[in-house]
Image (tube, rainbow, N blue to C red; front, side, top):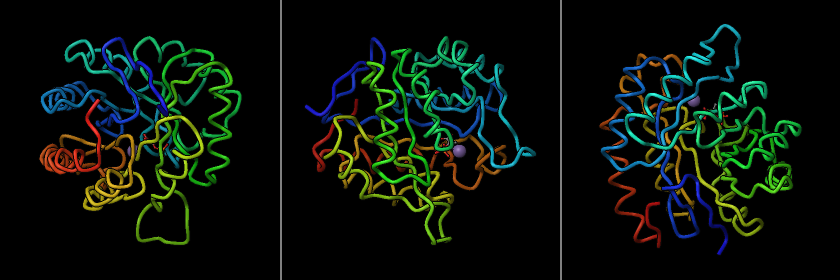
Length: 261
Ligand code: PEP
Ligand code: MN
């Protein structure tokens, strides 16, 4: 078996299983995160995402609610029992973050922050590790070893698109990365179709491709009212769009030999 580990006491992830993670780009307010959490629970999605600390390209953009965002995630978790994943941007927030978050997300921009990778490795907590958008697969897997070398094998790799010469989408989803990585390392690899798409209408076709290519899961950005989102508003799905996509994934999974976690 390529991998088998517990994400939480109630959530086991192993080869053959398909992990769905969904939620907003950023936590914005209580109503936004709680309504999303309730919707995900209704659909049977096990993990809620939402950034409290946002790695924005411009310092003028919304940076996330920080500690308050963590508190809102804590409330969403308390009410729904969903597992939480949120990004660690600054290692000094690690303890506060793992008090709430079941999975530590390392974003594309920190994917070669080796001291930080060692530090999250030492926690033993599951890590959602995103590929740097300028990194080759080899560089990505070497970086992942900084986490696993600390004795932490609970690493979920995320293909989230790379920079190419093609400007029609925000990044180019490297769909080949899925089978290549699965051949080279015994860790799960899931696809984030939202950030490479950059545009909501491309998220479903990229998701179908991910399932078909053998991805071990998907992470999708969903917001109750995408046009009003404070970050990544163009690419987030509303609840109806997400629910339609989930139905497509429901019907594709058995064909691709997988079952939901
Ligand atoms: C995210 O998933 O919240 C995010 C910022 O993505 P990435 O690090 O892949 O850009
Ligand atoms: Mn985003």
